Image (cartoon, rainbow, N blue to C red):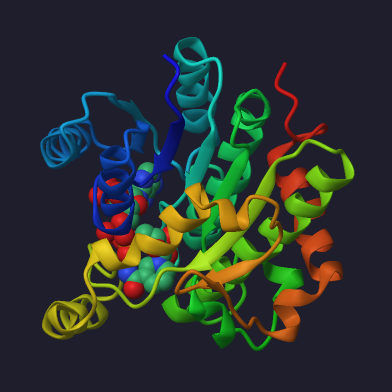
Length: 289
Ligand SMILES: NC(=O)c1ccc[n+]([C@@H]2O[C@H](COP(=O)([O-])OP(=O)(O)OC[C@H]3O[C@@H](n4cnc5c(N)ncnc54)[C@H](OP(=O)(O)O)[C@@H]3O)[C@@H](O)[C@H]2O)c1
């Protein structure tokens, strides 16, 4: 296998699936990471049909579970010697406060720790690839954050708000991007890490929000842009020569975009990094024994 390998999480729906189609059309080998065999296989069929590219593979993972991520990445390691590009894309908004099996608030567990852990377990495969890119799908929603609840990251001691939990998790995507980019630059790995806002897109997004929110998306969604449009910045960051050396940046519409002063603050990024290491029990990030 010598084509570029791109791994996309949450690739059975919306922006992730559209990203997989566009990259498969460019002849890349695509690894889909999805939680449902049925939805994953249906997406794989659609991606192959839309691209006439047979090099599409499916691996199953619940990205809100540390054990599942460990198991899935082990099966990926058994099959592939390298990954050129990792696109951390799977994410959701949650209508009520619930904890994952790891005891994390769902938005934190899936949207932030899903990216943090998955990347840890495949970092050596990305080092072995030739493109060496990590792309994290964040959101404009990070701008809604007023206070970072450092004393209550799992939001257990406050009135739960789906928008607060979601926007915090998307701010954490920027912290993760910036911290990891700096670390990998300092270590001379050649790996770049960037993040993006995909646009406001009509996808499966919102279905796990409150009933009011999911109904609102159903009614207003068709007026929004399509997933094929939402995939463009992910595809750009995954493939364009223009960003070959760019790292630690936030993009929208395939251009560097403005982020809040909170999002730029490397002390915040470092603080989240340390807390994420503690929560996951990882001692040496990117080193899998
Ligand atoms: N849509 C927008 O306007 C918008 C704007 C800004 C940012 N974003 C971001 O874009 C990314 C993609 O969202 P989307 O709009 O394409 O929504 P989507 O259509 O709902 O896609 C989300 C994907 O994540 C997967 N996923 C959810 N929970 C998972 C879990 N526990 N384990 C594994 N996979 C899981 C979903 O799988 P299932 O089908 O199994 O649920 C689905 O494939 C997200 O990170 C979102 O925050 C979206």
